[in-house]
Amino acid sequence: MKKQLLTLALAIMGSSVFAQSWTEQNTGFSTPSRGISEIRIVNTNTVWALAYDGAAPTTNIQEFTTTSDGGATWTAGIIDIGDPALKLTNITAVSPTTAWVGAFDEVTGIGGVWKTEDTGATWTQQNSSAFQTNGESWFNVVHFFDANNGIAMGDPEGGEFEVYTTNDGGDNWTRVPAASLPDPLSAEYGYNGGYVTAGNTFWFVTNKGKIYRTTDMGATWSKFNSPISDFGSTAVNGKMYFSNNTNGVLLRNGATNNFYSTTDGGATWSAASTFTGTRKVLSYIPNTSTIVATSSTSGNTGSDFSSNNGATWTNIESGGDQRGYVAFIDGSTGWCGGFNTDATTGGIFKFSGNLSANSFNANKSAIYPNPTNGLVTIALATAETFEAKVMDINGKVLLTKTFNALENNIMDVSSLSSGVYMMELKFADKKEVKKLVKN
Image 1 (cartoon, one colour):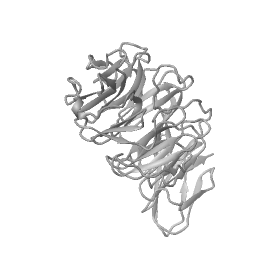
Image 2 (cartoon, helix red, strand yellow):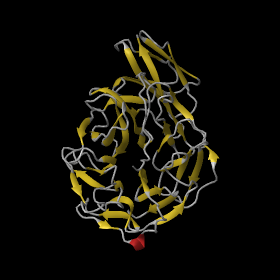
Image 3 (cartoon, one colour):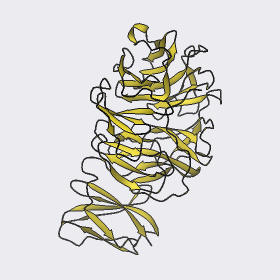
């Protein structure tokens, strides 16, 4: 059975402590302990995510959840592709109604692509004659760049990687000719989950440490050497992350965790440096040098960010809930996986801060008393104008007040019920989000 380059949590944290900058949302899965193996953000309102069994991660799960209102409500469903034994590779989506999944047989590797146009109520196989050569075909991934243009990729079949493209939403697919694809090495193959996308660029990696890249949605391809020998071996493996079609990083996991960067789309890589982060599930803020890091292990909760392509890291929050797969669309909009307790409790977290420049510089403020019975003083190092908002843990704004530089910074929260809230302080050059407890 071929391995997947997917980082899944192997144990569940029992606590559900509120953590600054992340707001818990409810994925809607009826079975408890559902984790999130992948998140695909279409826009700030529309997100699709795949599930896995957090209590028994090797159990095959064909379930998804989606939101079209920024996560205020999530709707979970079954991905009915006609065979519950097939293993899902990934999900890709372009709208609240339209998405595709890839799936394969874990013994034969035979698989394909299924599409939904009704928000997951039904799924229809596309390109059904592809990835069907027993003993050679092994389906890896499907990705759509927009509603029309997509790519599906599998291991070598007939001497070349089996890659197809479509320009009509998957109604018709064309295999990429051998002349447009670099030849594979002997016994070279790809990985489920071993791909990256940015704009019209798509990369996949192999067991020979090679990187295949297309910058024109699959029409033509280049092949590059990477700094590691195998992207998916047990002893040493790695994963790439790209901010745009040129700038990216590669994290090598092994006895030592090495870090590499590229500025030419993976054609060349920097010399190895020691990875200085403590959390190794990464996601770029697109088109920036900012990376958010979470962790898939139960003993390493919390999250970090780096504003310099991973050279140095700043803690966002420590402890609390376990944070899994993470994805961002901009500096203030992102989600990471968690685990649900039941259909109405938990499962995913939405980022509620701002990772734009200077947003996490040294804090300007402190709030006290905290917990409070009513009045909260906001202490600043310097006098300045700012806005204070108090929100519930779902992000709903309950109180707002603007303070000028001449008044006492005291906010009355006595009207709030007892519980945990967020206080967002917006200054001219940054935001701070603090946990506030009302007795």
